[in-house]
Image (cartoon, rainbow, N blue to C red; front, side, top):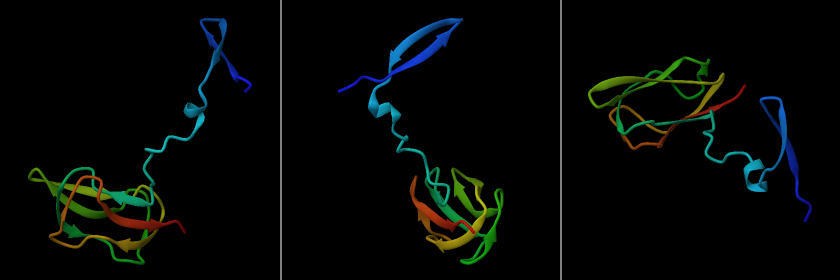
Length: 104
């Protein structure tokens, strides 16, 4: 198997370094922006959108009460609300899927 060497320059000195194949793969932990997930456990206290609604980055989708604070859960992408996975008064766990958004 042929080793891949990459060039790395630090302070005008060039180095050859071997980068393992596993580190070249995309990071699997990167969240999918079309899936809005709870960043903390809490309770849904308001749902601001309906399925089919058009949303823009920054639009408030839900209010999540966590640790006695209301947190605005916003869209990070432009699209349409594909599916609401929660409703008012639902308790959610960390990383639970709350809203799916399809890109236009």
